[in-house]
Image (cartoon, rainbow, N blue to C red; front, side, top):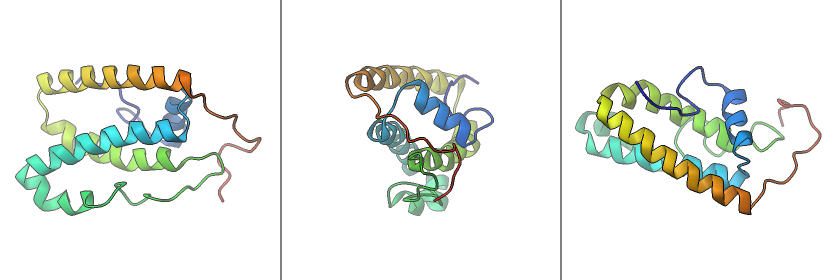
Length: 138
């Protein structure tokens, strides 16, 4: 299966936060990245009768998941934890339903979106992180 997404492998806060750091995404850019995945997943769920019946209600509010609207860490990790919830659903439920062609198309669309966000991130740099431990809870 193709796909080089921050939630494709062994996903945790460190891997997703590291992904955002790699691309220098500030919190607004992180939300844009998350929103792209949210819209993609919502459209897929609403077009699939079985998923719509089971998960459709979970896409009636934004963001998706048990950690929506929660920032556990002093390092602005709300979009990190939200992406873990959404990514886990995508990886475990939607990806198995995709053909190889659909996965390659998704990978290509993701690459183009990520490139556009990367260019935008260069124009709006992330402010420096506070001098705190990585996983100090608030």
